[in-house]
Amino acid sequence: MVDVADKLAYFQAITGLEDPDLCTEILQAHGWDLELAISSFTSSTQPSASSTVSDSDPPDSRARTDSASASGPITAPAPGLAWRLVTLPISVISGSLGLISGAVGLGLWAAGGVLSYSLGMIGLGSGQGGESSAGLVSVSAAASEAMDFVAAFEREYGTRGPNFVGEGFMDALQRSRNAFKLLFVYLHSPDHPDSPVFCERTLCSEALAPFVNENFVAWGGSIRASEGFKMSNSLKASRFPFCAVVMPATNQRIALLQQVEGPKSPEEMLTILQRVLEESAPVLVAARLDAEERRNNMRLREEQDAAYRAALEADQARERQRREEQERLEREAAEAERKRKEEEEARERAAREAAEKEAARARMRQEKALSLGDEPEKGPNVTQVLVRFPTGERKERRFHSTAPIQAVYDYVDSLGCLEVENYNLVSNFPRVTYGTEKRSLTLKEAGLHPQASLFVELN
Image 1 (cartoon, rainbow, N blue to C red):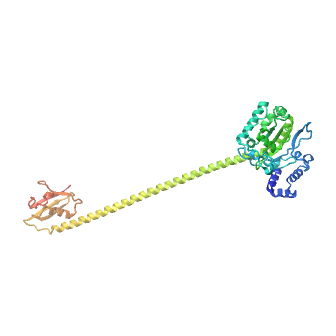
Image 2: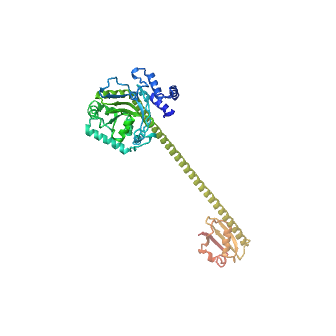
Image 3: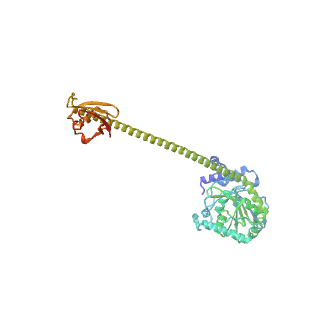
């Protein structure tokens, strides 16, 4: 049983109505009888008596096939384009590169009576409960069968016929969808007496074959092969030669736009196929434009995404550069601060050391000044000493003649006129340097009594 949701989906796909509430009301008004609702809808939209199919008609007449009787072609006017939805067997679907998706406004193509139904796992056996008795057709097997058919057809009838693709049915269907073309299907019955004449005179005719090659994707299969047999069951082929025009629909289904059963002349086939093309052209053009719009939108999005990524990368680069520059400035500021602190600490340390040194010299001067005692008065045992400094400054003092030369050094140190500690006292005439080894001599012993003139010589 087809559930309510499936019936609603079928009805929307067939009629082209997008309002689910309206579709639900129509189905409810017909007691959820899908065929009755579709027949009523198509009858109301197409009042022509010739295009209305009675509910009492047998299924074959409502399937809208073009067929030929045993006594000759049917002389009735060719029916308008009619179609039905066919659910493909899982064995056919599993042999494809991918599932076909996306209905293409099928309601616009309904020009006559419509019979909508969904087939189960056709071709997998007729046991109760839908039990399968046939194996699945793999991708390689489906393609191999198609290539075998093409090779056999060209071997028998040459290369003047349609360019049948050497791939499985689902792959051929996907090819037609990508090319925005309908799929021309030919099911070949090798044992049927009409097959050779139909292939040679109709399919391979100079009028029909180029038309099919230009406007359709052609797929053929032998009913002796697994996939061809299953497709003949799915399409309910009752007479041969059998041709059909299909297109992808939704949910693993195909839309059967036209089927032709029995022998046909090239002119008759050409008329039927031209009518199918004319009636399906608006939808194919719309689909092609829609796909082009999607491609343009996708290209536009890709360009926008690329521009956004470029702008983002530029912003990130600027932010990275700004951050690196900020980090560099912070490093330089930190380095400058470190140097400033080091220099400040060095200055403070130098000042502290200088202060300590000056304090030490001051203490030394004070100590040495105290060690000299009071300056003696002039007398026979008193030596007058004149000291000249490198700056030209002169200092003079009296010492006891028995005082050591070290006392003169202590006197010079106590004055604080020198910034250095290493120096010697030197006499000019004669030139004598009173270094460390002579500092213990008394002034008298050194020959500096009663009067001496010394100058400071820096080391």
